[in-house]
Amino acid sequence: MRYLQSFNRRLRHVREQGQLSLADIAEICGVDEARVRSWEAEDGRQRGFPGVTELLDLCLRTETPLEQLLDMEEAGDGDQLELPGLAFSNSDDLSVALQELEQEISRVQLTDGEAELLRRFRKTTDDNRRMVLQLLGR
Image 1 (cartoon, rainbow, N blue to C red):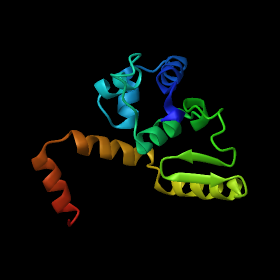
Image 2 (image 1 turned 90 degrees about the vertical axis):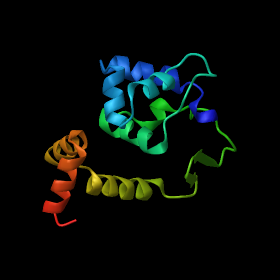
Image 3 (image 1 turned 135 degrees about the vertical axis):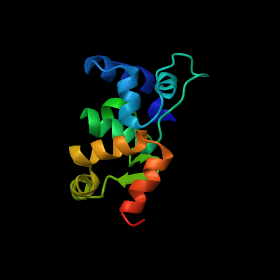
């Protein structure tokens, strides 16, 4: 995981700059606080790493550029940027790909009201969730 070698330090820096707690980052990424603590662990044997979804949530919700969290200074083969599930050649038109990505993100991004409903739905009891789903015809 060459691109995550200094992720723990970079995440801590972003978190401290944004005056965010471990709990804040955990809520943003939809994980527990212990998981975020493992992402910032100094000891490499205890260190964990976020998944792609968690990483993208973190970037979007904190308005942090991905390259600020990843070790992208080193050129791998000089011709391609490699991330899990993503590969871009220097010959690809990245501006078009980025525009499409932005459009897709804005399409699926929750409004504040939707996020609040989802948060409340997740915190309620199983019985209440079943009732809500029944009301919605599911």
